[in-house]
Length: 387
Image (cartoon, rainbow, N blue to C red):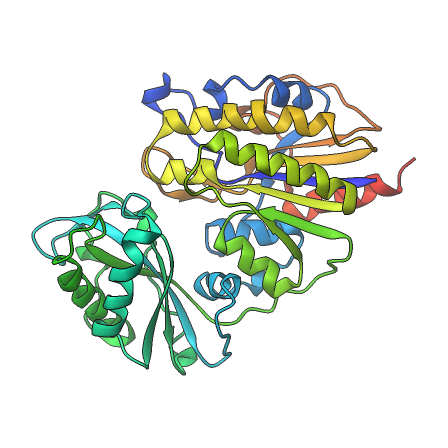
């Protein structure tokens, strides 16, 4: 029996004026998802345990069935996805090339956390020059593609934890309240300011850098036999690399979302033929929230339903369970994450249910049935033993 999980990253949202005060899930036309929901168990699932970082790393660790408390920050996971050298004594920090507005670093606001998803061919030569002229062997900056860089602090483990506000959580806000000029964070903000001064002279969308996601080596363990993940982010590449979980990647850059989904569909159908436990992760809805594009996010939901989900369901074949969930909330009016329980459905092809509603945030709340991510994973295992 096949066990399938479909995660729509950051699809859960709150009502937005641009969509008639509906969420993207509520506004979107999703006939395939609606039909599936009518035969499934619905409710909400807690993917972010209390006290842990609200974001995709913790949430996807939870939904994958790994212990999210092993999480030690984001950057080293992405570094693992890039197969950068891993050293347990080093500190790893994610660095975004960003677009600031303002007259100086100290008085700036972040307009785009990704420098408008800057193209690799534009960013790479400038980022490598930045690494050579502003950073050094102790604070080594490694370019990772598009707007992403990793800072490796040699023998910096003792500095952990170092707290930074993620760029996507402070879009449009003054950065002054988040700048630290004393203590162990002071050196990092000095490097951010020097990067700002350097990038002001370059004619590219990225005119600054913002650090976040400071991390040290985690220990991600679990049974990965017969399992596969299908993803398209460095974060998921890193989680699967550290866990020893097979990962089949699909890259979005440079083509339409529909074309991307068609390739994702082809790989997902093949994965069902070859593996018993399939984890499909789709990132687009989260990215569009961070870019404050609720209408485009709604259209992405419709594309997932039309291009991917309907055809995928037709091609599974064997008896299966299918869990569908958002990993966390991502608000398309602010770009920030939210950690409240997210909507989920659990479908068992051998034991269909009858329920009303659609796969939306409010419908999930209305069920008044909240479980943990571990309990959702247990449902898959228990269904496998039932006849």
